[in-house]
Length: 482
Image (cartoon, rainbow, N blue to C red):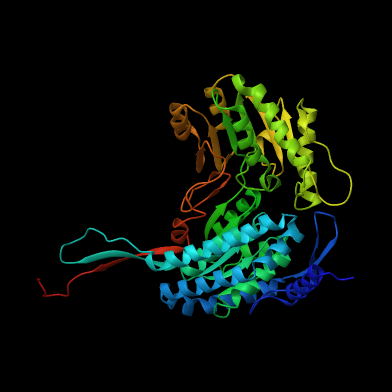
């Protein structure tokens, strides 16, 4: 018997295999096969783009760029509004495929699609007011700057919030006049193909081209001399390889990469509230968020109550319908870090064991007694693991929170505003959050530091990343004095 949902999925699989836009690369030589991480059932297979199709896509985008760049920004903004409407019209379809490919609950996946549509509308509004600067020059001359699109943009986007993240990069790149080649994550290729199909229906031909594929396709794109700008959201290792390749081609690179974000819990805070914040930060989307809480430093004065409450928060999730990780490969990587922590002396007060049965589920896990020689405290885990270390002072916790090779974000829970200000000054990260693990103004664009990336990844400043500045000087012709 075929249910309504199964019929929709069969249609989506056919669309993804056939291609989604004017130029969507698909090769019969290799394919990506996806299984539902909730139960291991087959979702389908999507052909990978060949090297020839990568070359064709770059060439087509290059040819489409001049006409798109010449369009008035307000007109590009109107088309972005239409893209947002198309996204909203297909929200349930996209959310269903997101759930099937990544295991994210459909309600949360739908929130991500709606957030993506809102982001497209935001960039549609910003396009006509994206402006240059007037410069102080001679009184009888005009000096100013104009922003021009870089050209062909290659966007490599992740699977953990695939529509919302892609919409941000797509919106900023397109509305500033760049032609785009988009490679969605190989962990959600059906979703990426459908997203490309939906958006391409309202855009001129070849302004947006979607290519599916894994590392080989990514390597072909990032080494291609015909690309002017790369934007990547994903692992630090991949981001580093992209930056190295771009150093040879001269392309501009925007990277929002991995993190090992600390949470510092100060003395004097309500330990139950702090545990709720920690659980949201560590367990939301099953820990599969770039700015998840990855390591916790709690003051000894509140440690016992905090650790007890955090274990209870994890237990609540484990007795409910806790979403799986994206696949068994990631689950194995997460559990390897937990096992290494056990071997080094950590203890689990909740979770920490591989569940039986199909799928890629992993429990919300609380680890106590964690030290800086454990991988869970020094590397990105990207799973629902909350490693806790007890500190004797705020200064000790801040010093340890500031250490490490990543510099994405950090959170401080404190009632002491002097401590808060000290943390803001001392933490070498792109975003510091005081008394809230998530949230912030929608235009809050950050610059990741160290191994976490480079450049503005969100907000109005992302428009600047996708453009280059030209300085204009207009003087008087010879013989004219006034």
